[in-house]
Length: 64
Picture (cartoon, one colour):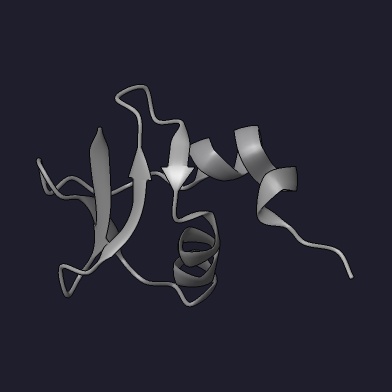
């Protein structure tokens, strides 16, 4: 499991090792919309959000 954190070290989302979101879908979408810098907790490398939004875009949007 891999962990995505924001610049303050707060956990935003959890993924499998192959980057499938298993928790934090809403928090990830909110952080992205606020322009927060997100990194992988284990490496400190920036998270490429387009991987999640292209593959799982419809699951991150909620309709009324």
